[in-house]
Amino acid sequence: GNSVTQMEGPVTLSEEAFLTINCTYTATGYPSLFWYVQYPGEGLQLLLKATKADDKGSNKGFEATYRKETTSFHLEKGSVQVSDSAVYFCALSEGGGSNYKLTFGKGTLLTVNP
Amino acid sequence: ETGVTQTPRHLVMGMTNKKSLKCEQHLGHNAMYWYKQSAKKPLELMFVYNFKEQTENNSVPSRFSPECPNSSHLFLHLHTLQPEDSALYLCASSQSGLKLKETQYFGPGTRLLVL
Image 1: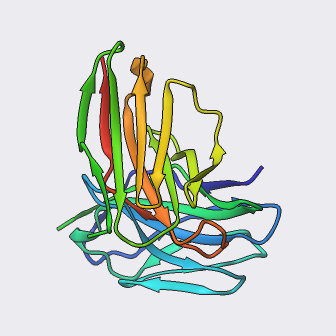
Image 2: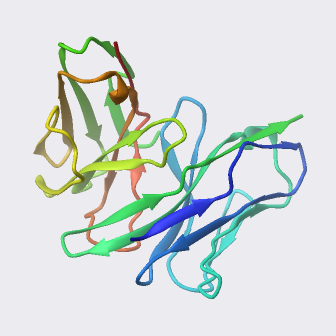
């Protein structure tokens, strides 16, 4: 079946450091790919998405490129802030018929220290 | 403000209790979802409703019973739960559930503890 694998956390960085969170997927078709973020005590929020190969999603300084050849969707940010501390989830949209479903990775906890 | 609200935010219940979780979306969406978030595990999809009809039951035990009276409201009725059911229960909604590119919008969740 379809699956999402993201790097194990936790990830701890200093402010202004470069961030990469790896995400790879297994899918039978051509899924859409998403990054969601969960801040402490809150639900998940969409951070960015890409719907076809070579698309780049971007938001709030975060970027991820849909790489079909490597089945990857790595999340990057050039300079993290303390406010970026959260759990990040990679997900793919798959299925069809009556509805599409999201399959999530386990999440990566990011802590940014001042 | 995500447009999806959940009540209560926290719930403690005994194994013999009956309780209900409520979700309401103010986004005009037609698809609603229940997820279970446990520590160290990926989010688990439990149920999906499209246009008030249940279209997905992901092998969820019968002690969890969903109800969708209209497109804006979703309930999860709980009875005779087990301690391993303790988790964060997240509700989400999307426009129709019928498009690959759709974004799901999540509520803040209900933190459930079963004693």
